Image 1 (tube, one colour):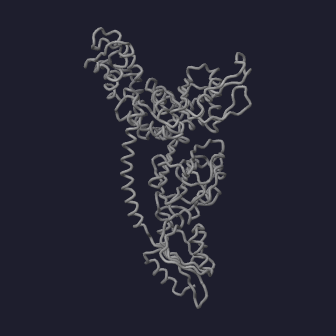
Image 2: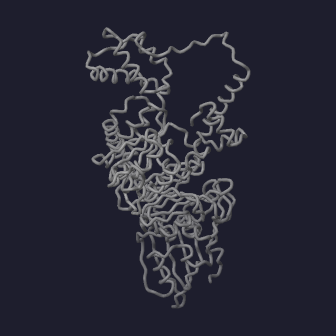
Image 3: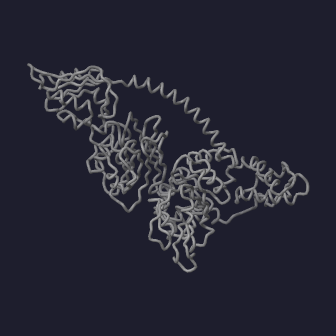
Length: 617
């Protein structure tokens, strides 16, 4: 169309503004380097990947802050490609989901909320098919970050964005990640789910050639792009320095018609890079947010202190537990409390309930290990009259119904039999169930907190716990460390528990001697806080004076090692094997799959050794 096109290209590439020229048919004839920079038309961001497409069996991870906008027009129906069919998900919802492409046998994990809910972020952290995944939609700083086994893929946004990472079905490596400019490359979430190819990324990848393409193939049909096209076709519109949004980018645009000898041949759109203005605004906003964040943290710390005052201890380990518990109390997600017997899981579950929006509603504590196996289903879900021999004539309401609009705490969930696990899975998926012997589906609005002292991954490998249920309840796990790993808390625990015991036993307050306290600090505490309480109560009962001495403590002193203690060669080998497994697990942050690969050990043998050596991770 123009003479000396190379000269024109060189000239426009030197411009500090983006410069786009389309002909009267809407085809791009000039698209300078600055325009490509502004709209992210480049393939060298991040670690890179090959070209390809999403294939059945690939793992899909999606973070979307406004379903249907800046994601290729993604609809709730499209989520069926990753096994999600939920009528409660609507267009414009915030959504985070993890699933397997075109495989409905593997249950997906997902959360969603209405966009008008005033929250700071939406977070999903979980382990999916032995892969540690975290997705965070930060509504304050305006970004979506997807983290896979420590690798972070972050995208900022102005108003809306759809972010996706895809893992290869066989290698579980990242085969695609979303980056700025995905609209121009035709790599929106909807396009890729519908089978469109994605381009390669990396240092030496050739950039996207936009010359000759229709303007609507590169830019979604927003108001500015439509006007641009209409002017190229002959409409009389022009303006200078107008703030507008293109492909989700806030820009300052000048639109000019181009005519030769009175005939309209196209139009020019000049795009100003306002990143400096955005940077100033962002820095100001960040300063204000920093102040607000500090105030929020102070309020949160006080709220955490008030809400979890019954959770005793000031060690860093227990502070982290309280912090996580506070965050859990502000969400609707299912919480899984992990830890040895006696660490205070029941107390923490009730504290989470009291700090949540359900605090004025029922809190139902169910000890799954204390209810006979044959009665657990009817206790949880109730039964209709005549459901079985001995059933009440009028039937019975179950504990899930009793917990409606409140919290149900499923303690010792690892003791639940497989048939009840199936029914619990349905409640987690649809919030509905049938009573034993019933035909009417009952709906409940209930928050579920589960707890176990068992290694559920080991239970899964032995077929005693359903894998799909594990991933459903492991949405927000909280590990409560054993007392022997936070011994600095023993001093505080003793001085808070002892007066309460004396008050309960109706006796004068008693103090503990330094020698006795040292004995407590040296002890291993296999029974954790529960054992400590029992030891202190017995000491209060048997001590005649006001001072508790070492002789009053019903604990065995730690056996001192002697040089002459000799183990068998087999025992030395086993000790070394245990240390190596523990060290490798720590190196891989507890990832069992990577540990097995590193040690070149089979799955069955690996889990047998975890059990044999009592290794919990």
